[in-house]
Image 1 (cartoon, rainbow, N blue to C red):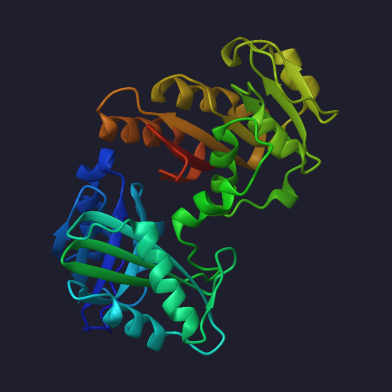
Image 2: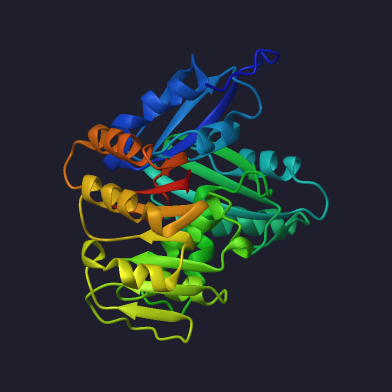
Length: 339
């Protein structure tokens, strides 16, 4: 549990949650921060107050599964008479030449204006004050939640130590020429779990079709053994396609390929089957190799899924981490390291 006992100042945070997993958010927040006060809750975000310290936002993202991001609150404003106070507060918080980006959200607000219209109005006002809007590479991101007559303004710097989870989604939207949504999931996993791609020379991709994960990995020059009965959309000299189910692949095929540095599993099977498959293939990867696995949520028993994953994987893996990444739907991405 994260707790900074040296700091007693209470700070407020906007915490974005997926409403499908909102039941887990309060438990996760308490586990990371200890005591906190819930100021406001909707089906999309929670506003909390805590004395856990200035690193609470980073801790909430890195030590939880279902919390996408936690943004320190710059202020809470009554906007019923306009946006002047919001503009002034944001403008005063920006340094000269600092690039900014705004994102507004309507959550049962009393305004008839769309979130996009509000973003444009506030952004133009800030630009007229000499500040610089930059949608692609901002120094600072502002999130404004409009709920009732209150506007919750959050500010988060785009630093390398704490990348806002939804930035993965925004940056991935700019990518064209994709095979499937699954490609985004793997890119997010590489970034979030800080995978050192340079140390990977070979990979095994189970449930590879239509080929999105194999393509991403092979584009790094990595040799891939892609295992799936279905055809792959993407072809590459770096990809060897075995048209078979993962649990049916013969030992001779795996021995010929050699022990890999990365095991990928994104098969449409339940949590126990996918984790047991990871355990079966542990003998086909090197000690210290990475595992990235998609844990499908096949029923409402999410806690059981998580326990199953931890119990099964711990038999052959260490450093096990689970995270619902931005492009996950009813699934969780699992990362681990072969013992």
